[in-house]
Length: 161
Image (cartoon, rainbow, N blue to C red; front, side, top):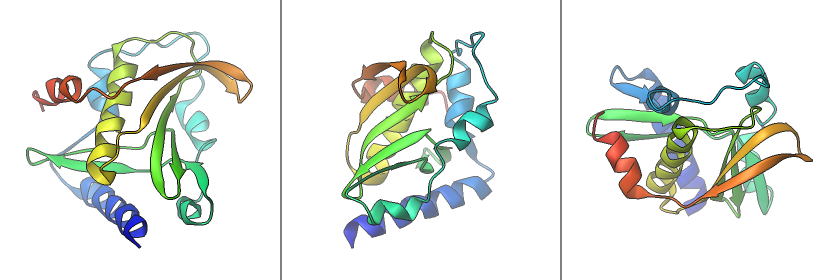
């Protein structure tokens, strides 16, 4: 029941954030630090839609992955976004994936991933593994970079919010 409550509360926070006048998206924050767009860039909505699965299946399976909306209020401003992929194990988020079709990255992608790690920690009181997938075309052909969650890095980013 606790897992269900945490997931429902996270979804409720996201809905509140979306309707708030005081909000900023993870992508807006990360964009300030630059993204490495390469020649392989697809329509982001098309790529993101590959990972939209039924969120409540998190409860049906021991291990499940889907896009999952996250939000948290920081200094009276909602920080919100939807990671490409959140891997749940027994209802607990254990991995956050940001998937890029291009093969290089800059600081913006790392900021994005770290902020999703922070949002996951705030919502679920866990620190997930953070994975940046580059050059993604299918599940057999991509490179991954793992990052450790860095709260000091995130709070430095958020101090200007």
